[in-house]
Image (cartoon, rainbow, N blue to C red):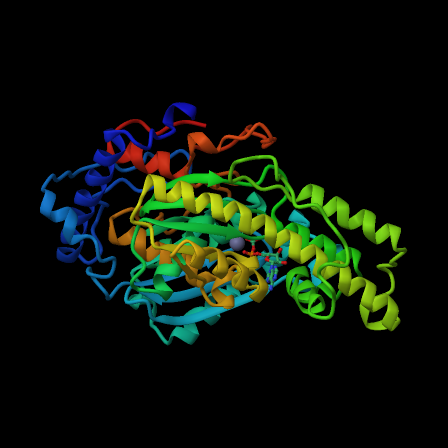
Length: 478
Ligand code: KG4
Ligand code: ZN
């Protein structure tokens, strides 16, 4: 994989970009002529395919510089696509129907909040069962609410990674069943790319390149989005993500976890003094864009123990003194957790502008980006740097089907999809699921000694797969 790390200042990466855009143009022209082409004109990610089937080949290339310019507006192409998106990578079962114009025709989310509250985290086997119980109903409701007949659908998009493989499988099987029955193409979607790209549905003027901070329960990413499918990872977490730290803090403080821990901490923090407990800001000495929340989580746990706070007593039954102490910890935790984001975002902005001086936006997305304190602090950072902050509304920040459908639209428009699966595919067909799937290659300056990420069984990044396929090279292997 290291051989695929892009050398950012090299001419090669510029040429890759140009090739990418010009081939997009050909795809769209070809697609207009044939509403659902019998085969893709660009190689798909070979995503939702069973592993034993062979991916379609690149059958077209084009090199006219003016064509690249025509692709600058992401919505200049066919606006009549209608895509069903399905998401089951973690603890929410979600489906939505979206038009390529950006119109959201329906959105349905069934959350496993009760399970989360009971276990204080996601238990894969139980999460899988919960997805399997509701998936049919969630998808049907999304189709009903969209008031479409099945023949109005253009394609089905589904999350294939990263996430829990047991959970991913439920969504992918459902997507393939529908696509097989209706003879629809299928788009395999990267969950974190979807968190970033949904900002382009919300804000039509958001063009590449842009910087994205993606903050959720399992991920903490700073990426430079150079183009569709072309991402440079400036930073990631060396251990836990910020959402995990919010969730555990909420659990240890005895908060009501039914809406997940983040919103509960955000609410309680309003009552507390953010200076009351002096938690240390993580990774101060690391001059990179990586994150670490395991140490802060530990500091919070020790403080809760030191103050004899009993999580068995729910916050609703706590004395006012006890409640005040918990609120102080919530506020102090939140202040430091977000300070860590601010510091790394400041550096990432500097790096991003060095690589792509035309960057104008920082997109903040993922569940934690629905937090108002997070948004207001990030806003100060971007304003200091003369950039703008773009956060999707909370319902599009937390896991949802709209972001998957929209990412399906973006990739479908450039021809990255798989042909319809067979109508009678066996239940036990081996599927290409990508539980550990980076979005892009690491920026060379961003490698940190503090990194402790396990590298085993990591799938080649989305970016390396797309770049290799555009060059007609064999796909990188795991
Ligand atoms: O993106 P998301 O819905 O799912 C994952 O992909 O993980 O993010 C879920 C995370 C949870 O950790 C949840 O506590 C956190 O987002 N979250 C929040 C808020 N709303 C959700 N964290 C802080 N403040 C919030 N308002
Ligand atoms: Zn997510």
